[in-house]
Length: 108
Image (cartoon, rainbow, N blue to C red; front, side, top):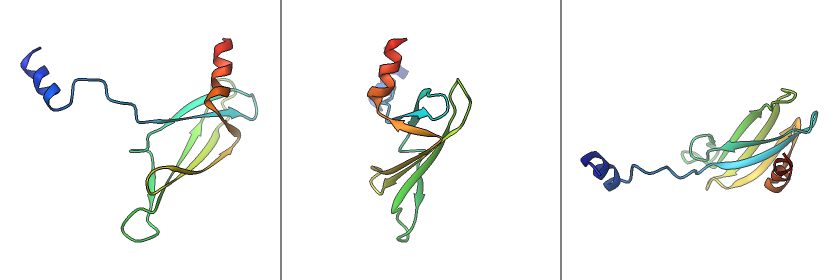
């Protein structure tokens, strides 16, 4: 290992970063396609400042488009001040579980 590699290891770099993303799954109401999408709780969430200077909640809206019918599915997620999910709403599709998503992929 060279000098730069030693420095990277010393300061915590050099390895693959941990994936902190939250994965969600949605099924299109029109064509039935199942789509996986990712939300990064560190960067994707918009704060809501209802109680003054500190964020009281967070939210994100994603527009997901599959490969079959290209119809957009809008998913809105809300999170509490600790970035834990507190609500979800989908328009144009249904949120499904990871197991439902995987069941289709294993058949292919």
